[in-house]
Image (cartoon, rainbow, N blue to C red; front, side, top):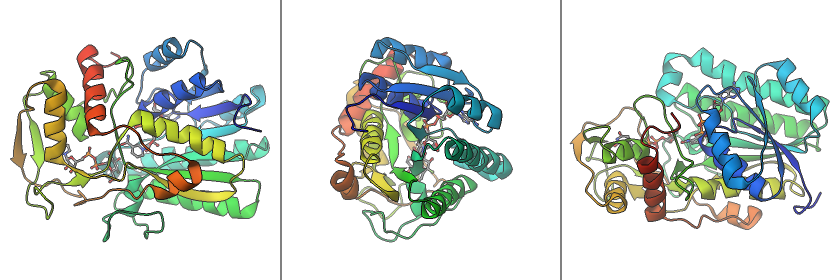
Length: 342
Ligand code: NAD
Ligand code: UFG
């Protein structure tokens, strides 16, 4: 099938942060979309906004990806061509406390999905992996040949799923997998109507900064300024969620000809320190972000950023939005929706 013909894409976890932005891009591109989501970490309102912005709708199946009957019914009822698999749990700290829940949800539901795909001879899948599979790297930037390691149950679920998909691809050449290793997704749709809506106190930097900016939290704690980096704070490769969403469409297009199981870094290739993000966010918001330096957070990697050249070469994808765009769009979303979708 060529990239211009209409596809029907199953998107697992399509109501979530990255999933909802990707569903919007798929609908805008003319693809038919079926979403399965149990709303464990998202709101149906995200998809209502997506429908509004796209001017057309996806099919929503509210259900658990681990439920074999539900997943079987989707493949029986819809002529699915390919799958983008976002559904899963993603909190590193929680995964240390309840590892079985992470292994059951992330690995168990991926198995349920693969078995249904196999029965229905749907054998193209784009998988949400993470730069966490590189652990604490010795050399940066990171390319896809960097040795893999993971230091949390969450990270190991990503590593194991990558291994599972490699084995499955080796077993039958009809299988085609793209493993997309995201760096740090931030930002929101430029409309200000679709964005990240974390529950509870945000673990991640950008949502926390934006809750400080909107007055929901007094100040940001910066976790350590004694790292061997240019200003002593950790370096990450922040990537705009819409660039990331566009990467999924490129990966899906490429799977029409690409074979086997291949990994791609989706990052900008540029690292920013925590204090550089705080400064850029202050510019976007129009006032400084109150912050204080506190002790290091256990488990933080010193510095990591992507070499995204393989994605450019093989997928024809490149990020186009910079840190200022990410802060501006994230702030627009936060300012217009201080309570998220709630
Ligand atoms: P998210 O929590 O916003 O989205 C995940 C979605 O999956 C949610 O809508 C949730 O309700 C749904 N879900 C969870 N378990 C499910 C199940 N058993 N059945 C059906 N639906 C289920 O997370 P996100 O930030 O959009 O991340 C999407 C994917 O990308 C995840 O696999 C995550 O591990 C991966 N990832 C995220 C980041 C990040 O920083 N956001 C970085 C690297 C990788
Ligand atoms: N940070 C703060 N204060 C905060 C939150 C974060 O200073 O309140 C700092 C962290 O110490 C780190 C940087 O901001 O230096 C980024 O932290 P995030 O929590 O936003 O992102 P991480 O890079 O730690 O985590 C991300 C994903 C994880 C994934 C990990 C892999 O959120 O899912 O990358 O490295 F496992």
